[in-house]
Image (cartoon, rainbow, N blue to C red; front, side, top):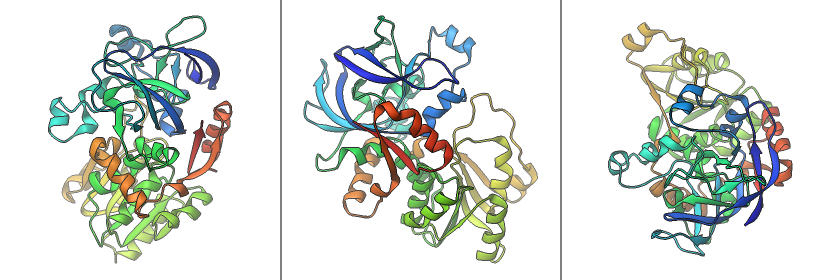
Length: 381
């Protein structure tokens, strides 16, 4: 079928909206008509080169990361299924999980679906069933898809493992947000940080992921939720999602948290900045108390090797520094769970979407993200 898609031909260029050819689904695959796609910062990492495979690794495995159709935060209706698909059928509403969940690998079987073995292929751009492409340019060239999804197009073909069936009463444009940003942020607080009632929590970076870490901490019962962001608009929005305080930087947060806790410092601190840098780790750890936990959710450049860290403080104050992927959530359980919270009025999704865009305006959407004028921008089809 003919459709349009936003393609990144190489890093440090703009998204190009072009006509493409989309093959039908093969064995284990699903054709989805999308309602919307979130504009997540992870796709920006392709543009900046932060999330580009090492050329030697790509060559060794025969991978060609570019050109690639972006987008990994989408929801829509199943239009057609390939042979062997059993968990969804035409007419079902689905959220596309940016990490597939096969349900059979050791990680899935252990209740760690965010570490599904199929996740190893999300930057490879091919269908995970047979490592071939369903998306092709007008010249017949294969085009990859971000996170095995490629939601910057109104129609896409994905593996069944990426599809999570949801209640058809949930608005699909809002459900799309739970495919990445909402679950990642909420889980950063509730799972990775393990926020408990009465605790003090600091969230550093209040974009589409960080604002949901604020929500998660508030829903978990934190007494103080300190939002940290240099953008005034985001500090103004943070109380809507449960923040009790909002400051511009970590130095200011350190003074505030010391005052709030009589010098004990925060129980948990979560890094959800647009880009994780090694220089942010030491001040993040300084925000937490003895035996406190600091969580790294933000994506770092794949080449980032240097981290500033006071090892004496880490060991002698028994602090914890932990990583977080997809909020350490189990998408097949947690996506429907979060959408139920939304239906009950306890999770804010409508308020997250600052602006919506046509696909042709995707570059403006990302410029608005860089300028800090959106909590979350969204392409609506």
